[in-house]
Image (cartoon, rainbow, N blue to C red; front, side, top):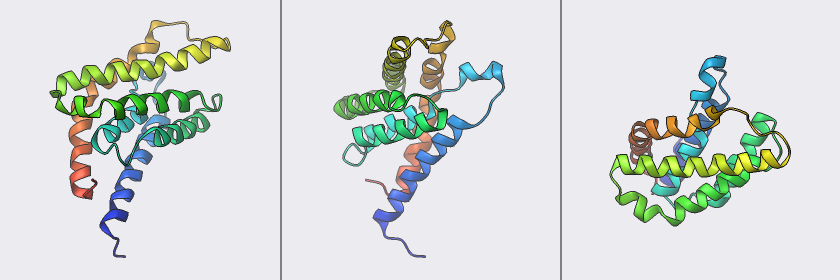
Length: 163
């Protein structure tokens, strides 16, 4: 099967989304659950920064809806957070590209925390707010993972010729 470069690029893009969703749904021991980064958020942020013309708010909304179905949460809970994070990442993509990796990691921490804050706000409004400070740990772990994930996804983007 001979795919056009555009189709191959879309396939690579969808494969990274699928990998992020699989990593988000993969079972881990109870002690490791707070240390699981927001894989979907990290992959979404990368693609919003790398190819803002192809990935944006709609993609964030759809990935968030898939996450809502995957987790069995209120429909739109994660979709709102992912759409807002995608909006911010696309809006700031030129600045974020210019940052060194460590500064990018701090910006990613802020974007992931904004996502979690929106989810926390909605959960608090319906009486399901988490009771521990470990709720914020995935954002910190996401910041630590960012430089490596950036390098991996940049390689995927180059191999897939995604522009």
